[in-house]
Amino acid sequence: IPWAKIDVLTYSWQKCLGGEGAHGMLIISPRTVQRLESYKPPWPLPKIFRMTKAGKLDKSIFEGSVINTPSMVCFEDYIDALKWAKSVGSLDGLIARSMRNFGVIKKFVDTHDWMTFLAKDPATISNTSCCLVIKDLSKDQVKTMTALLERNKIAFDIGSYRDAPPGLRIWCGPTVESKDVEILMNWVDYAHTKIKAGEIKKMRIIVTDGLADGAIKALKQAGHEVVKKKLSKEELKAGALKDWDAIIIRSATSVTAEVLRASTGPGSKLRLVARAGVGVDNVD
Image (cartoon, rainbow, N blue to C red):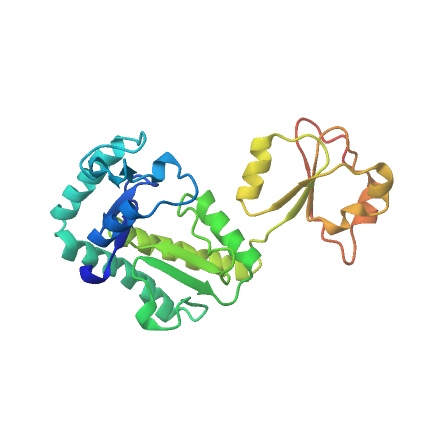
């Protein structure tokens, strides 16, 4: 690091070495100290951002004092992480572990033409935070893929960011094991194959009667769109279910033969009627 050019440097504990989020390190230069002691902001600063006391740098916060009450466990966690880092070869060992993980991703990208790195310039591809583009799936299809991975406890929260193209972001830092990255990519390949073949689809599901919040949450986590909405008998008889892949009912809604005739046939999406609870006497 070219320290002569740096006035303020921060880094997070929770990145390559793991650790508790929302905590990090701050390194400041003599120029920054001078600025802190000479500049008076025209607005009040929250206590957590105050680094001066009586017009001078509060050195105690760099010597063990805290601005407010943090989780003290995070300090022990970081010390433990540093000990582990030393045991695997310190900085060189950490970089080697990360590069092995990145190698798994790169090998997959090189052998699967439907996936590529988000970064176009090879020099800017991160070996820790691997951002990938899936060229032949839509955003909704990728959501279905990530939901499948989460449901099977393979990976969590690896979908691309909202403004990014359809794809994945996979953490390949040194605390990750290469064999786990290999398992993940095998699952990604499996999910992609199933989704492209149409064997796994996002469903639009309407829930017309009561249904447990946990059930709705599980359906959404599986990648489906779930809407709670009452439908009148007249709407049902007029074919209102044509635009839905599935309907979940209890006892208040009756899916009669007349409703089914109106909601099936050419152009209809309906393929499932599910009854929550006991009995199917209200489904013809």
